[in-house]
Amino acid sequence: MFKEKEGLFPGIHKFTPRKKVGMLLLCAVSLAVFLWVVFVDKGEDLQELNASTKTNVGQSALTVQRLPPPPPPPPVYFKGYTLPPGNPCEGFTLPPPPADKKRTGPRPCPVCYLPVEQTIALMPDAPSFSPGVSNLTYIHEENSGKHEFGGYLSLAQRNDSYDVRESMSVHCGFVRGIRPGQQTGFDIDDSELHAMESCRGVVVASAIFGAFDLIRQPKNISEYAKKNVCFHMFVDEETEVFLRNSSELEGTKRIGLWRIVIVHNLPYDDPRRNGKVPKLLLHRLFPNARYSLWIDAKLELVVDPYQILERFLWRKNASFAISRHYRRFDVFVEAEANKAAGKFDNASIDYQVEFYKKEGLTPYSTAKFPITSDVPEGCVVVREHIPISNLFACLWFNEVDRFTPRDQISFAIVRDKIMSKTNWTVNMFLDCERRNFVVQGYHRDILEHWAPPPPPGATEIVHPPPPVANETLQTSGNVTTSSSVTDPLKEIPSKYGRDRKSKRHRKVIGS
Ligand SMILES: *[C@@H]1O[C@H](CO)[C@@H](O)[C@H](O)[C@H]1NC(C)=O
Ligand SMILES: *[C@@H]1O[C@H](CO)[C@@H](O)[C@H](O)[C@H]1NC(C)=O
Ligand SMILES: *[C@@H]1O[C@H](CO)[C@@H](O)[C@H](O)[C@H]1NC(C)=O
Ligand SMILES: *[C@@H]1O[C@H](CO)[C@@H](O)[C@H](O)[C@H]1NC(C)=O
Ligand SMILES: *[C@@H]1O[C@H](CO)[C@@H](O)[C@H](O)[C@H]1NC(C)=O
Ligand SMILES: *[C@@H]1O[C@H](CO)[C@@H](O)[C@H](O)[C@H]1NC(C)=O
Ligand SMILES: *[C@@H]1O[C@H](CO)[C@@H](O)[C@H](O)[C@H]1NC(C)=O
Ligand SMILES: *[C@@H]1O[C@H](CO)[C@@H](O)[C@H](O)[C@H]1NC(C)=O
Ligand SMILES: *[C@@H]1O[C@H](CO)[C@@H](O)[C@H](O)[C@H]1NC(C)=O
Ligand SMILES: CC(=O)N[C@H]1CO[C@H](CO)[C@@H](O)[C@@H]1O
View 1: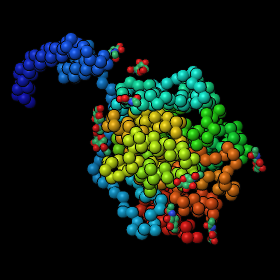
View 2 (view 1 turned 30 degrees about the horizontal axis):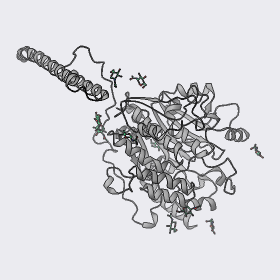
View 3 (view 1 turned 135 degrees about the vertical axis):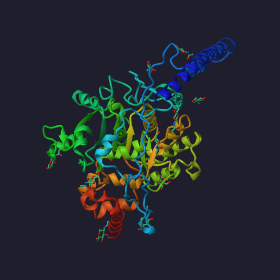
View 4 (view 1 turned 180 degrees about the vertical axis):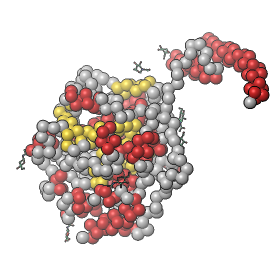
């Protein structure tokens, strides 16, 4: 013991002067480089000069610790984790898809979640690193003309917004007014805004506009999540009237787990665009939240939000997760399907796709691997609110504001433009995995046998890509309530979920 110490000290003594010399050398080198840059290279763009001097100073400061001026303590980031060996979720693989070709419709598949208590313990105490951008601010303009909510970006501004850099300011909705939700359009009462602002952890959010959906209560939510997760359901005035009349909302702001937030002055005429505000801009509505889970109102959440965050974000080191469309991977194919299903006018869809094509969007092919799809099924969005994922959401929203509200058409171009500047990625998981934690219900008109199309103003807020034609047919005919189609809790157990679901699926089709 003693001997070891003795042996150690001379080593240190010998080492210290060397280190000092090294420090001096490095200082001299950086000074020389600095002077060279200033005097030899002064023809260079000033911006570049700033950048190169910064890099040099940064490097020497890193190599030679604690040179004056002392660098601020490095920010702490979540570094990810691996599951302990032997954990059942480690090396968990999906069973092969059903061999029977007739059974390949949308269906849930097993997902290996950790027990809720473990996921709560694994919640990162620090944010993930945000590559490319660390300081994201949002543009505020008092007089922005007609398209006052989105700000109506020029093409040059749009182009600039894709130039990802450490400090940037972008349009991200809510361009007028005092703060998001206060005289911006999409207006919310102060007391509600205050509650939203004080939500500092996990948000689960959804929205019903035009009284088009019923409120669906999340199932199988842990007591911890009930206490700590902010469940907020945004509704417009029309939906509020409906809820009050059906006495679900009597002198209370809650229906079950959901806190009901009434939204006034919806910014768009098109309810589908309005639906994109809470879906894509939750980081603006909940400026202090760390994680959010968006679910379309037609979906019923059946797994604890912490388990979902653990499985799709933390375990994957991801800050943005969204499911793939179960069948379409290609934006061009998706656009055609949207046209064929009459989801938006053909000319606008064509214009958007042509625009993207000129910007370099190509059909999906396996050459894009590791990207597995260009088409998301956007009815669920799982996010950590860090600058880069917030930027992605803002830019995606801006596309929806500029072009059609079909966000599955604009997803890939936004992702690819950001990925060309940073090593950030989106975790695109399987549609069948999504169906494991949300169960699809049907819109209220279908449930109540209203004849489609719905009355004016009562259109669907957020369209997923057209579900299978077959599924749509089923819903209009023989299915009357969501519970008769989908028993949410039965879909969680993994082993037998798929097969039984397939049978049910087939049975519904066949009947
Ligand atoms: C260079 O950096 C300084 C501070 O770091 C900043 O004030 C200045 O505006 C920068 N110049 C350019 C051209 O970016
Ligand atoms: C996440 O990061 C950790 C530590 O950096 C690493 O061990 C792990 O493999 C990463 N996981 C994934 C899915 O990339
Ligand atoms: C972030 O950017 C804004 C506006 O560009 C600037 O005012 C602010 O000082 C920046 N903050 C940091 C920490 O760099
Ligand atoms: C778009 O921005 C890039 C920088 O990201 C720039 O090089 C390019 O010239 C810009 N294009 C247009 C048309 O403004
Ligand atoms: C309120 O509900 C009753 C039936 O419960 C219905 O007849 C009436 O039309 C509803 N009113 C509104 C404004 O929805
Ligand atoms: C739009 O395009 C689709 C397919 O390209 C076609 O089936 C449909 O008839 C078109 N709709 C109109 C209104 O032209
Ligand atoms: C991404 O790039 C940043 C530097 O910009 C680096 O620190 C980080 O380790 C990279 N992450 C991955 C997963 O490569
Ligand atoms: C719907 O079902 C029929 C047969 O039942 C099949 O031929 C068709 O391809 C299906 N459509 C879709 C979109 O899956
Ligand atoms: C709720 O989820 C847990 C997994 O975290 C599962 O073990 C349990 O069976 C589920 N409860 C119901 C009623 O499905
Ligand atoms: C629209 C539709 O699929 N209707 C079917 C409902 O079920 C009955 C029998 O179960 C069929 O005869 C209908 O065609």
